[in-house]
Length: 427
Image (cartoon, rainbow, N blue to C red; front, side):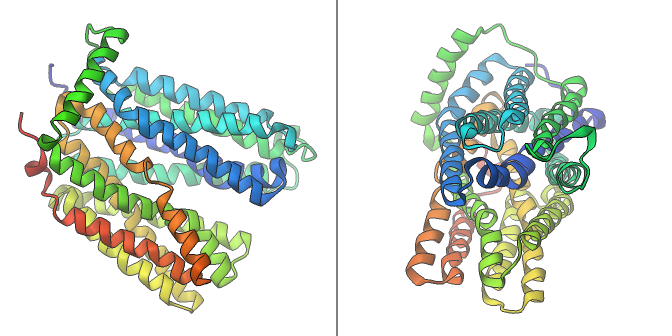
């Protein structure tokens, strides 16, 4: 395969801008606006709404986890990544725009769940092939900074879209475009806005970022060859033992991170009696510091390596999370909580860089599919452990201590994973 010219600023910035585009779905739809609208206005029962929401996101995660390595293996056979990104992005965009039709009534529960399921599957699969483009666009010396900058752009894009949603549509006395509050049109309009946002800011990637050339392999043949290659990779797993060890470590600390975001607001409300507005401000603050951390640590990734960046970040997460669970002073909680955010972005961005550096060139989609698997297959474990331990101990602080334990386990396993150059399988 002919080598693409790397480190082209326009190509890389256009690639990084996709993080800005895609993050709007996770911030506005999955986390803040639609999730709240679904529970309060559609289901009108927060307990049942939370259960239905959790089951739907979990089901989407299971589909992604089980099929991502296979779909990635097919894509490896066909060469190009952009068509896969385009189709999965289009699935997410159409599903997100369709949320406009989810009116504030229990009659629209199933429509909402189906659309969120499709949107989640589309957005997550698009990210797999998007991540796999990085090694072709950036040299080894610059891969870390671009991964970090893109991750930081993602946090910034999600927050920018949220700010527009809240202060242009939701939290205003007179919504624009004659939108009526009676049928929650001002809230539903934000879902259409996210779809437009995603599509608009994804365009530069398809216009200016270079892609591999398409092979002569058709879809049917690619499916057969991809399945064969995936089975070969599993059969020869010892050849990829360090990649497997890294994925196990990542699986554990990503579970811990997911639990932080799932329970952070609940902990702040329960232990420090935060109001809904204060929880929202705390969530925004966490995203700001996480984005800043991803950008600032990007240089460390290229200078000292992805593994070192992840280990340093995990130490920061262990210390700051422990502090958050021990303090009783509100100012200290804010300070340590926002400090925790600084280390969230770097550990995720460096994970992407590490995988990009260790993946064999002809198996990158498959390897990023396996990374998606590692991020989804046990995603239920952290929240489940926190929930049960909180119930048994009757203490949020004790329940949340599971997160620190998961970070420590992830750190320990990662410590015994070598740097990317040593971990990369021999050709």
